[in-house]
Image (cartoon, rainbow, N blue to C red; front, side, top):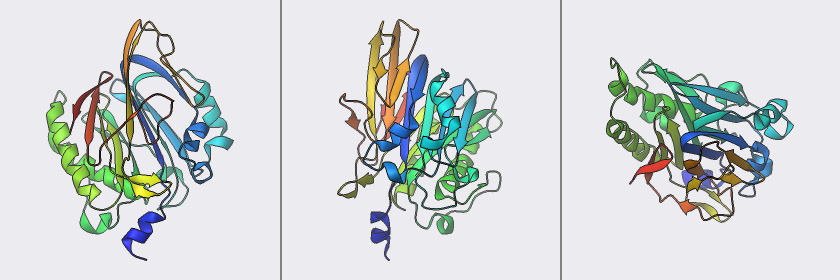
Length: 278
């Protein structure tokens, strides 16, 4: 089987990300989230979600179907508040069903937690790139290996600093990294260090094959709306009178007009706005 045939058999995981100007409560129905794209039966291999709290994050993961998870039910009924949220629903292609292979993955760097999620398949990643040693995967997935590779590169600008590096330096490292990864196969990424969120879109599974778009995004400016987004799969609420929110998803989650992220494009989100798109 050649690489093209292999990619055509991939049923990809689902990604979700949120950035808001002020803390917002996100209640995400992971079971319904997985249903988007018409691939519900395939997304039963694990789920995870991360809420940032300044330099730290609450990360909850489980290597089982969200539909049958008591922990997922607990998460969906809690009002965890954050300005950055990242979620992933797994369709296993590499690595057994285990917590170590369940996303989003997280690592400490520069005194804060960094969180990462990927869908797709990075063919030959292990053969082409060697990790430095500081960041090592716990599991067997190409996604976690790629995250460790990104953290190796980010370490060059985060180490020995009393304050975070400039956002432009972070963006440039991420742009170089995702361009290289896209050469290995479908590569859609969402990464956050709690101050910015970076997303890259490439290709993903569609009914007629694997092609762009790999991600969609929605920008909302909410004035005095207690529930700026409310659907069967996603509810976002805020106590603020005015709020800015950007949502990222593999497949649009509401009936609103979501914009496709172009193939190879990188978005940088900060304070509920797209501050860079190239």
